[in-house]
Image 1 (tube, one colour):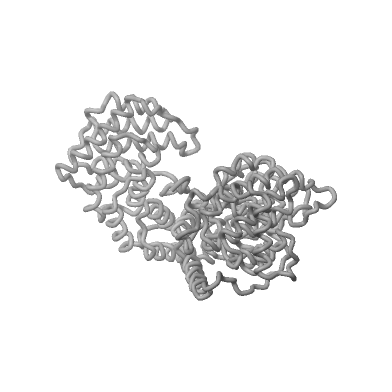
Image 2: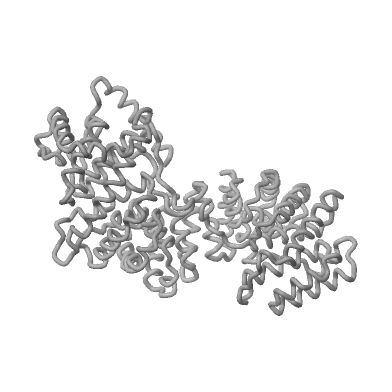
Length: 614
């Protein structure tokens, strides 16, 4: 998927090259082939990438499969920078490398045509796949080489050792080469020989099968359980924990609670070894799976506050993941709110530094998470500075937002500004007004992409934000009144109807639907040009046929940010209004005349979908 987690490399971060024993086991190995392998290994020991390519160019006609796999393995190791050496680079157009690709393809296709079999060859095939996965080479000969490897490997699964098979499928996943038959054969072999796979292999396999979209939920359950069982006797590292959790969370496969508890406890014990990427992925995964783990998140907060190195590693996507993860833990009832405060104290200054670098999805995620975690205008100088900076720079991301992200951003700023007028020492509300106006204009153009109930919720939230406008307030009030009439005020929740009433100047205790409808009509007609603003999204076809559209939140590039999925209806409105200090008491939904039974049926279906999605 877009920006999917890279995943740790199998076998402790490296593939295994072909040694003398493998060379000797390959039928037809000549003294020259043995000499070539020796030269390749010596050049690699000296970090001589150009020397390896020169050896390849001078000996192509004498290289067998072991030589080819060794050359590719050594090149990949040098490019990757294994062993503490500085990483090297190869020009994609290097004719020596292209000749190696061509030779590899020819040798593998020859083996397939001749039905060549040897117990040593699977290691060569796995090494070639691993090397190409590491080099990320886009070349027609490489694609053909993978096709040949797949055909060769499927009938030979029993000849692969655990690390070799892990390397093999990792290369296919990393290169995004589709081969369902290969993954099916590998799956059968893995499940039949679990005891031979180490925790490192197991976590990498979870990453592999999910990345390749060749997983079955049952298999992931088995691999996760086996991984957790091995924690009692085996050492693991942060990359392996992140691989496992990323795969489970991306596939939305929920292992047993004890598995998640054990994995979380081991992650907490290893926190000093975590890099930012691994920490953000692991915490994101726990929250995406709905797994509350106070011990892990309390430790993560302490680690963030106490590790200058970790704070230096923070990047926009990582900070969005972390804030989203902490917000979800709080929503699940985490009993460690002081640790959330600690995490915020460390992350808010970083957000302020990175706010201009945030992509649209990250921008929405950060703003939404911070307000859900309790930030509001005047709560702290740094929070005020952060949201003021977001308002100044956020206009550039609005055009790229999805409709769900628009609603999330509406909620975030309505919640943050709920303490207005600004307390003494805080930015004045005028600082936020240009952004609020641009956000309202953008959101009005997207409302009709939502289902009816979600549209009602978004209009109610926009009504809250109009309180912070001055120059164009009447225009936006009229546009929202027009939109509310199109949706039908009867469809708004009781809380949403109260917000509409305040929008048009009716006191909540005076509310009745006939009076609300008349007032909305009067306000909508007051500014004819507002009808154009309210109709900005009509080109999408309006709400006809959208009575029951399950609009889902966007994911943070498939693995990170997952906004609240499901229908934004009465529960979403009431939850949001309660954050603003409004009444959270639910009343029955209104219905258009003659449509009460139909609306009740619709609500039941929507809630069933929401429960199923959760």
